[in-house]
Image (cartoon, rainbow, N blue to C red; front, top):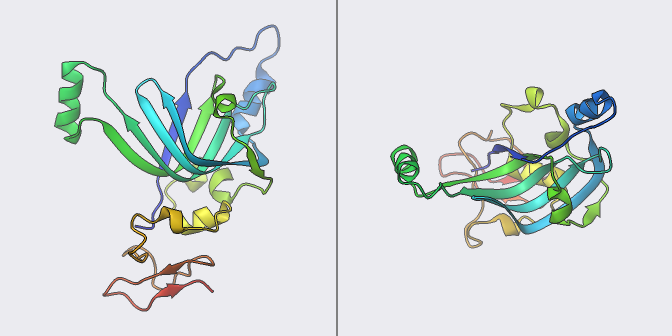
Length: 204
């Protein structure tokens, strides 16, 4: 399905501004201005307590505040897995509500805010200095609720090889009921139509 999900993640930890006016720091945090640098993540694993997140795509970091990166936007393929506490009623509630042993979900966009040294520990290497695409920079109040198509978001974030995103390389990419018949995929992507939908969609 060519659709997009948004996951909002926060990393907990102390962040104090002592002996000075905190207004400029707060304003910088609120602005959440991304730097022009981008960093590539290949099957990156981030663990926090019972939460495990995996990232395969591109990170756009926030411009440093007081010398530290306090946030980033991720575009690509990601997943999150959350194990419940080892408490009977917690596991029973999870089974009753989700019929599962843990919480699992995939996402295409993640907004991360750090108040600790998470970004430094990730130790990602800069992969380019292209400006972040609109999906990463547009204010959430304006962008939330928009319909995004995976391959276009990935292409805008610098991805050119889409083969790694196939679940089964032997099966061609297929369109979706919610994608217009006249939609044109990005260069290098061919989408096979559903049996009841027009001709194959090909990039120009």
